[in-house]
Amino acid sequence: MGIGSSVSRSVAPERKSGVIDKTAAFSIWYRREATDMAQTIAVAFERGELAQEVTAEAFARAWADWDRVSAMASPGGWVYRVAVNLMRSRLRRAQLERRLAKQAPAASVVPPPGVRNDALWDAVRALAPRARMAIALRYVADLPEADIATVMGVSRGTVASTLSSARRHLAQALVSEEEGCVQ
Amino acid sequence: MRSVIDEDRLRELRSSELDPPPLEVVLARGARLLKRRVRRRRLGVVTLCLALTAGTGVAIRAAVRHETQPVELAAPTGAPDVPGGSAEDCGGYAERRAPEAVDELRYLPRWLPPGREIEHAWARAELLNRENCPRVPVAVSAGRLAPGRDRIDASLVLEGPSPLRYRRYDGPTFVPVLVRGVEGDLVRFPGLDPAAALLQLRWTEPGGGSWLLQAGHVSEQELLAVADGLTLSTDAGSPPASAGWLPTGFEVTYQRDRPVTALPQERLWWHAVIEDGTTLSIDVRYSVPDDPPISRVTAGATGVRLLSIRGHEAVAAAEGAVVRYLRWEERPGVQITLSGELDLATLVRIAESLEPVAANDPRIKAP
Image 1 (tube, one colour):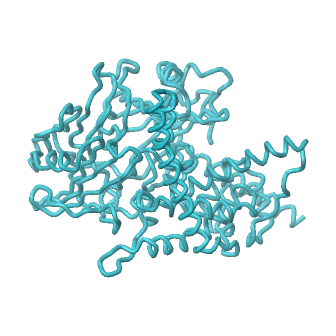
Image 2: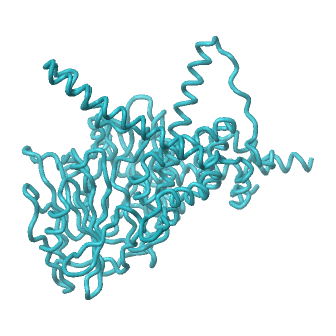
């Protein structure tokens, strides 16, 4: 199944004198989605500095293909998938460049701006990449499971179980953290 | 120790402090991308003309490939999902249930590719068929079968009747049309290959009941003619819909023989995940409604293989060498789907090795 369940995230273009104003529709959608996307990418990949660039590129691609993207049941799901793929490809390239530059150190990992709960951030960072991505798409981007499945290229069942397992790990990690604080 | 985390706490990961790039920057960048794409297309045409002049087939193939390959990294290739009715959100929960709850669904493979093992396998319950999101059955489907009758090259699916009207998005691809004497919508989902673009017709019959007809590889006129030729019935003992006229080469592949009267709100589901770099998942579910796999072959999809798995008719949707899913009906009302990035031969071998397992099988592990 493709992206389709988040109908509430569909694009509702405005009309000007009976003519659909494409730019207005896109800008409304962009304002609604872009902040969450930048933050989602920052949390999922631990690379705040690349999140804005990837967000810009993903939305630019959506604008370049707006007639098609706006007609999709979930343009939000589509643009997230583009962003995730862009990020993966940039990280692969960066890894290759580091290898070519004789193992220069990877960029340092810092919490994305605005995440003030260091314990939560540390626990999220400790998750496996797939689990972290699922958590970011669910709780930062607020995507339903069906869309997360499409963005991540896995089945909905896998999303459900990944989220469930990630929540359990986070709960355990945060409880340990709190217990540590009490002691 | 707490075993669940408060979901509100996870939403603390949200923030409005990471400003997105200014809109103007994104619009300008998108415009540049579009310009570059147009230039590349023109270049493709020039290359094609040169190749024709020189008479080299290699250059022709390269140019054509350039023209038809998606520019985007990740544009979904399948048809967008259409929610049943006018649902705001058809997503439902997937609660864990004990493995004992799914005695008829608990299958695991006897064989897996070397190095792969079951990461977890568990039962779940899924919420479905809610009031604002009814599951709409397939009434009729038709396909154009390849000469060997082992592949569907084009398909056409009629879903209905839905108790809710299909949502009308305010978008450029919705065109009001007259369908069967009532006002409906023609929706165009443009694809890279215009001939394969997905088309939908949505309308509500005067006596109630909404219908969705979708197809690829047909013209708008043909789709309207198919809708106009349908015989629809509200009689409890008759097929809800029968096809009349069909485009050349199409034949009926599925016909529901009587209307669906009641559907459960929840269904059980057995799910196994095999992880080793790429994910393979095995889903065994009650099919609700009981549409056989062939009836839901994605309209507009090409190259859907028809084959036999464990003595049952199965469909396999492929993208190149990779099969997106392999699905068949193991028993009436029970469907099994294998999905993962594997080749067909491997998936078939795994499928053939599936066997019912006891609830205390040591391979059963909670996620």
